[in-house]
Image 1 (tube, one colour):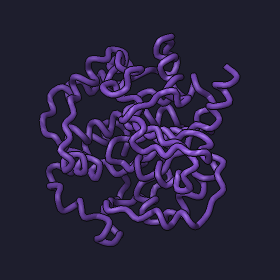
Image 2 (cartoon, one colour):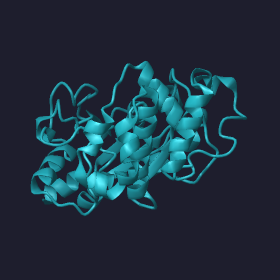
Image 3 (cartoon, one colour):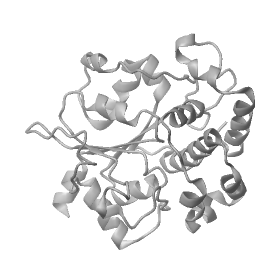
Length: 287
């Protein structure tokens, strides 16, 4: 266990809802190529160690399961390999640890934090409408009912008031808004005020990368350099929030006051979809 504990101090988990910038952020943190990137190791279909668990597994922080702990321990200490997890890896003598890039661990961050205290968690949040639109554009589908309502602990602890919404929603864009709400609700609950976690906003990272990345570098114990600016260019843009409150993600004035280059997605979402989306977001307490 002492060797594993030593390894844990070198491990960083970059988590967030899919299409929120997890890959970009992980690559930015590894711009010196000093970490091994482990790509989405909690994917049940491509990582045998996690094959017995749900596509987006929920574990309450206090949940205890020996098999889950052993599997997560192997994943978080870099004891997994293969074409899926190593697709972004550049293993060399300079590697000083691992960055785990993951979009399917958002419902068990508190459990991971509690059971693997050396793990440093960075959670990135992007505007829900931009996430949903990007997911639809990518051709993604999501079985909300199958993934979430099949997990009785998740329904009992969180989703009971939203079971009808999860079960009955058929429009793909709105499904991804609901997915975003579920994942933010759980992640913010588990990471609120945690010293071993850091929240990053995608939109701030786009518009002011130095200001957003400097505290992240301090958090993981890396020396910060302006050289990172060479690696911040991306092709996708979304909207920025002026809120510093982790829960106040959607604020009054959120949709106005910024250049048109960062709000192009607004023209592709109807007023009806926006109104319904905002109603759902508010019902989850994220407004």
